[in-house]
Length: 580
Image (cartoon, rainbow, N blue to C red; front, side):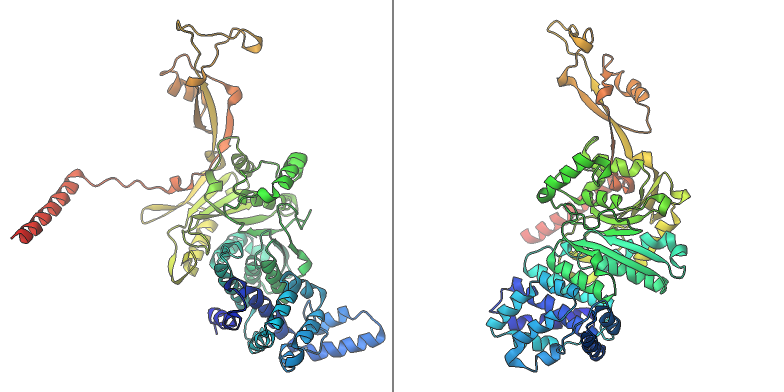
């Protein structure tokens, strides 16, 4: 059974809930029961050994936990003789027995079910007389790892969450990112480190500040396991949504990760990983979501701690917090002297150009580009995500650029690389094929300009090409007789006063000399003008689409005229036939 068929089979439990539960509430039962059944199946083979060990250590009065973990072969265990199959064998006591079974899990698993508020759902199902039927249905679903591997299970969770989100009018994109987009991001992160990552026993850390159900962390782990089975990837993350957090934690638990590294809470207002730094990072923060709820804490950190905190370079407008995640990831980079870091983050078009010189957004771009941290930006096709059809971009950022990339930024236009999906999922109508992922990875790896069908798809720029100065050009204020008004006090004494109605601003590329431009473009038209240098600001923007625009000349007039005459002639013929 593939993951979609399996997800549909699991979701069919909703038939039992109809009437007693609203559609938007189905997930509250289905998601925790799916996690419970998965954990149940994972522990099944070692259960007799764990129970025997538990009994023996209890008799000896020794803390049994380390011994139970060893016997279970997992980073969790359960000390109850019950499991889902034995639970449904005693219909009259299913509620009490289920609570007893849940209470016998190790603490990390109990936390997962608390986040789901599973006890509340069990009570509600019991009152509705549905608990036995639901438990029986799940006991019949085979989720053993030898039947459904971790990768498939991750996809099943994602599909269930997507259905749940659709029915409860939530945005599914808040919970996860399409797997092929993650694969592309992981490829871009690891491609330049293949030599290091292939060494035996290599240990690396990966982090996602908006972890969702853990898809990005899992895909990074799968990549490394494929390329080097001896490598070890330690995964860390933080997640705000309780259901997503619970699923992510369950997934990491089954993978043998230390679940203390998966933290619940809002990354922007309470960083769950403090002073920790990571080798690799991945993130798909919410697009265009305001940060009003955490504004007080973020502004306080910005003003009180400056560059010692996470938000030193500047703050974006409150309507979109995605650039705060970019700043957060920058703060989690290891210093270059300690091996450095690289991260990939998905952003919408707004962070490329929103905000003029001196604005928070421009200052963040300036910080990233002037410190030579931006390696590449890849423009993805539209309709790639479940909750939005807008254009999205992957930024690849790192503080250990290879020599040939230093001082430069690569832009890759992958907006034409897609195939249509057989069935749309929410707003997602397109996907990247393996060939598309390989093509983008190859373009990134080669680091050279490239064209396809006459159109540019890879371009390389110097960092300063994205910078500009905004200069303020003043003209003198004149009185009724046309005489220039001069200042009478302080620094302005004897100086021409500016006429605010004639004030103008100009954006000049950083690479252009201001005085040369002024003499060439302004003075011939306004000989009395001057530049107020105190008002000059430096800004940065990345006009991505402009760099890939190819001008198509309009058709010749004769050709258009000929086509119009042909149309008119056809219309006249049709009219003649009608009238005749």
